[in-house]
Image (cartoon, rainbow, N blue to C red; front, side):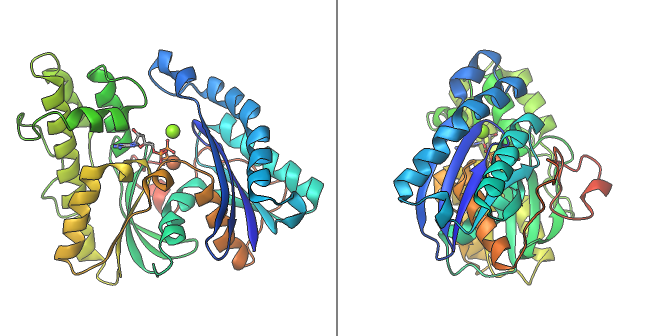
Length: 339
Ligand code: ATP
Ligand code: MG
Ligand code: FE
């Protein structure tokens, strides 16, 4: 089985060809950092325009590199949400047009399901159920992944997402955009124990997250301490929160066969190190995708397409794009659901 995957929900435009035996025949990606840098964050209108320009050539390049044509693919998988609606529409409409023109089925993929299943692309032995820490630019959740389309959410953030906290801290420290990698690089030069910072919700019995108070405290301390020490102390605080909250979730999900992390913040070395230790303490394997598969890409969308198509799950061509689309059915009920 061969699936073409398309991704355009935020500020990465991407196309990839992936097989059901986990071969990534090609994956192409265009970033928009230069376009958004003057604004210190992603500007939705600029992002949507950039997706329009980039997507067609990326698809052509991906097909060429894989030495296949549209006639060879079994289905087209496109991100249908959640995300910036203009961008999501560009990828979804393109996917629909290709599906119609080539007479192929469309698989509408939830971007979060793309992140959630990405570890199964890189790790063939990863079986359900697994405990997933999903840490990205817009989400911070602990989910028991029971199967395709079966996600039981154990926790979410009551304010900011972890990636959002990294991005805001980068802005406060004048480290530029995108923020996460910049904070990590700067933190490497500082002392993670130099500055006492809060660890919101650490010690509480429910595994939810909160990062707004941490960010505000960083804001109060900017200019009073070396940026390297602030970055390092901030990163340590986030790592401590993620590890503590995940530990609580593990206790609530004894059926989990592995501890898994996915999403852009999973690219952070300190985060991966803390979770490696935590998993070992619980006698569980720790699974994290390679760094490039953590941040947004189309290979994970193609892979989610593989998993869904294998179950016969396809979607009609009049399917709407969804700016909000929680993975679990109960999400809308929780305050600040983070979706
Ligand atoms: P979502 O998936 O929730 O819709 P998104 O697609 O924008 O949001 P991702 O692309 O998965 O998010 O991840 C981007 C986020 O990951 C950004 O907030 C970025 O700062 C963060 N990030 C990327 N690399 C690192 C890193 N090395 N350390 C910390 N954070 C990082
Ligand atoms: Mg991005
Ligand atoms: Fe993402």
